[in-house]
Image (cartoon, rainbow, N blue to C red; front, top):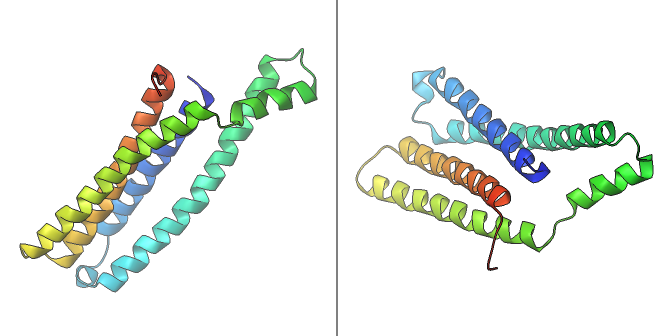
Length: 161
């Protein structure tokens, strides 16, 4: 499995853990808060902030682990050569850009579709907090599918531009 696939897999697992923590937090909330969208928004913003910080830490740990792995496997290389190998792996080429574009397009479609579903649900009389969670679920699903497609395309390769 390539470094890019491992990094994406780590991001998917982190996202799943974050959503699981959010679900446990939501089920533990007081019932009187359930209809207050301002409280929901504060909770979501707190989880977004912790998710951004966690993702940065995760990517740094993934890069550190990869660097240690390369230096351990290639003991005959000097430090400069190990740095070159790691830097060559991290350079984004045309295939990386193409994979990112293909995967993000599908992720955006799913996120946009969830917004349309949420608006339709509101038109049908669903409570606003349910529509709010439909949008959140759509963004999570879009991100999850985007990661899975990225891993698939990295492992399979992309042909025909």
